[in-house]
Structures are given as C-alpha cells and as structure tokens.
Image (cartoon, rainbow over the protein chains, first blue to last red):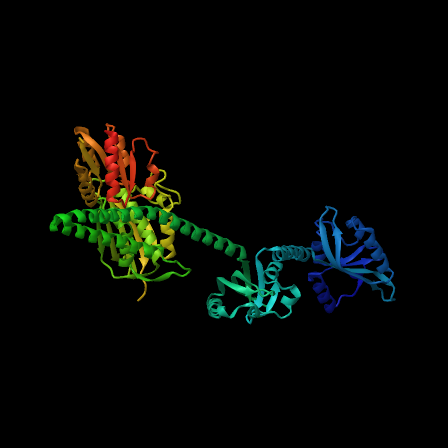
Length: 496
Length: 118
C-alpha cells in the first residue's frame, strides 16, 4: 500500500477528503491494475455491493466482465497514454447497461516512471435515458405536427410565420420556403375581416386564447379558402407567439351549400304542389260564383219580361256578390303567384299575411259551414317573404279545415298577439279537430308524415312550413297541451 | 213527365239557380244543401232525376250516388278542373256538367235524360 507510506500533511488529508466525497468516481491502480485507492462514488457508480475490501485486489478480478477493449486502453495508459470517452456503454455481468463518461490517465512515480493509472468515471445512464425519452417524445410530437390533417402554425404577435406544418401549407397553397421566408398572417387575410381580427386579438390579450373563429385565407392562387381557427398564446425564447389550429372548411361549406340547395328545392317543389292543389280548389271556388252569375243572368231575362222587379233586384244583388267573391279570390291568387325573387323579403303586417291566406282558402272554408274567427291583437310587422309566409298560413289553414271538417260544429280560430317576449309575435291557428297527442306532436313536422288519407296530403306541408318559419328566425310548433288542435307560429317582429 | 227533380249543392245560391232553371222543364224541383236530407227525400219520393254538386263537405257527389238505392238519372255539376273525366268512367253517372254552366245546357241535359231515363 504505497499511499499509506506517503507522508500525509493537512493539505493532503483535505485533498483526500475532497476526492473521497467527489460525485465523480475515481480509483487509483498500480501497474498490475490492483486497487491502491478509490472514493465512495467509485463503489456506488459501479454498483459494487460486495463487503470485501477493493484495495489490493485486481480490477479484473472484481469486474471479470470488463471487455478486452477496455483492458487494451488500460495497457495503453500504463504505457503513458491518456484516454477519454464522453459516452461509453458498459454491459454489467447481470446484463444491465450503463452509460459512462470516463478518463484514464497514468500517474507517475518520483522518477517519472508510470506507477499505474487513475480512472475517473461518471455514470450518465440516467441522463442518457432521460435524453432518449425526450427524443422519443419529440419525434412523436414532430410526427403529430408533420402528419396532422389539421393545419398547425406558430406565428409572432405581428403575424410573422415561424412554424407551419404540411397540412397548413396545403390549406394556403404556399411552399415551406415561401411560408418560412417572411410570409405573414396579414398578407393572407382579406381586409373585410379587420373588425373580427381585432376581436380575436382582444380575446388573446384578455384570456390567452382565441377562436373558434371562422374566416378566409387568400391562397397563393388567389382563391379564398374558408377556415376555422383557434389558438393560444405561448412563450418562445422569451417572446410571445401564437399557436393556431387551422381547419379547412371547404368540404363542410360545400355540404352546407348542398343541403341549403336541397332545402330550397324542396320548398320550391312544395310551392308548386301547393299551387297545383290550390289551383284545383280555386277553380272550384271561381266556378261557383260564375255559375251563379250565369244562372241569374239567364233568369233575369224572364224576370224582366214578367216585370218582376223583386226577382230582378235579387238577381242583380246575387250577381254583384258573386262577382266580388270571385274577384277576391283572383286578387289573392295574383299576390301568391307574384314572382318570388332571390331576395323577396320585405316588411309586411302580420294582419296582412293572415288576411291573404284567409282569402286564398277562406272561400273554401266559409262555404263549407266552418266558422272562421280572426282575432288580430297586434300591429306588429315582420320581415318576411310574403309569399312563403302566406304558404305557411295557407298550409296551416288547409290542415285546420281538414281537421275541423268532421266535427259537429266546425270552427277555425286565428289569433295574433304580441309576445311572449318583447319583439316577438305569436300566431295561433286552432281548429275544432281533436287535440294532437304529445307523441305525434313532434313527428308531424317530419317530412312525409301525414295522417291524411293516401292521395290527400303530400306529407311535406308541415315540414316545409317549419323550415320556412325557421328561415325567418321563428318557430313553428304544435301545442299538445291545448284542448283542440293548436299550431303556434312565433316570429321576430321587424324593428321599427 | 212524372216525378221530382232533386238538386243538391252545399251553396244555397247555386241551389236557387238550379231550381229556377230546372223548373222550366215543367217538373217540380226540390233543392237541398244537405246531401243526407236529400238522400232521405229520394228514398221516400218518386224522383225523376238527381242533379248533384260533386265537392261538398258532408258527402261528395259520388258518395251520394253510392248511397242512393234507386236507379235514377244522375247529373254531376262540378267546378273541379278534372270533373269532365268522370263522364263515362263512373257507372251511374249519366252526365257531367262542368261549372260554370250555361243554363240552356243544363235544361237540355235534364230534358234529354229525364226522357231517356224514364
């Protein structure tokens, strides 16, 4: 034990203590690779759990698994070389892997000859494993970024793009080089969104998040692309940036447009069907007064010849009344068939809409002994396509007529009131027919649902009517709580 | 000519016209706005012909025809656009007169079928 024979001064003692407690593992060997000294870390770093003292024993006897390559290193260092590795793997006898950073250097005797080697080793297994885990995580996140179908983009508060994933580049139609080469959010944002953008920035400022926000980007080819954005603030290298998630809404918009087109087609088809149905009814209603006019004109000849002024008077009154009746029907029809353009909405009084509808099917109802009460308690006006709205009420009145018909004293009541909330109008269409059971109340609004006999109804009336009312911002429901059939139309009143 | 002509139309004014025109045949005429009442009358009386509206709330013209237990000339007077299609298609319908009708044509048909039918 050479170190024992060395004279130990206080400095040496201090130095030995430093070495002993150093977190770095250190051991001193003689020329035969026998331990002369080691510190505490050496034992823990090497996972040496034997109670036997290391000093005096050969390194290769203690760790027989030391590979030949290391033994070569020891030999080279004993010959005077110094070697180091920043990362080396040591496979322990139990199969476990350890990652080490080490330095092997010769130490010299007073005569400068090599007395042995000093080995410093640091077990960096934990750091390596942490690094590996981080690497895996990063590659996972990188994959997500690269392969996400949602566009991902990081930009500065000024809108300069820092990171864009392929999905995002796809949406805007620019290459990565173009996007990373100074392209900004504002270059691709149409000016019409200025106010909306301000609101989103305000949201970022106050809550740290923005969106969901729907807008358009101008693609490189000049085509606008509808997108939905949402995102949040993050800090990157000490400056604030915005992470955004960008969804391409092109497909969704196309689908919505197709649904809307189908809806308009259905309304148009039902309008045609209703016009056809009404034409038949109206022909009947006009032919009756015409029959009266023709008939009385015929009898007039006889009455005049006889000098029967009473009969003449009766004939003339009947002719006048029948003419007015036919005229009203034609008037209502003309309004109904008026060209319905793209934007046919205008302000119209609720009372007018109801009067029009009653004129169109009122004759049918009146002559059949159904008593019709009209109770208008509002002067509200609505923003509406008068034709579409008449269509709704004609449909409800026709249904009411069919439902009331079989009752002993058939009646129909149309009530219009303000409310239930300020700015709304409610129209009730009720009839003496049996109340609609709750289980049917919602189903009747489905397309092709009908309680009428085959061939009598299209089964589209109520579903189309509801869709028309909803497109005017209102609701059409059936009230199963009412004692008889009751349909409720609620519409927002036009702001004066 | 024996028997009564029965007119059925839910609209009173039409009934009055039918009545005053058909009386020119010399026959007596009974008018009804209620088809059920008319059916009772037809069952209990000697009826030469029935002139009946088609579209009525209580019973349609064809339903009246179905419920008649007698074989009597049956003229349908209708304002429906497709009323003419009934001619020759429905057994028992003697003739169809579309509204608006010329009273002279009504008279002509009534005279023709009352003679022919009995």
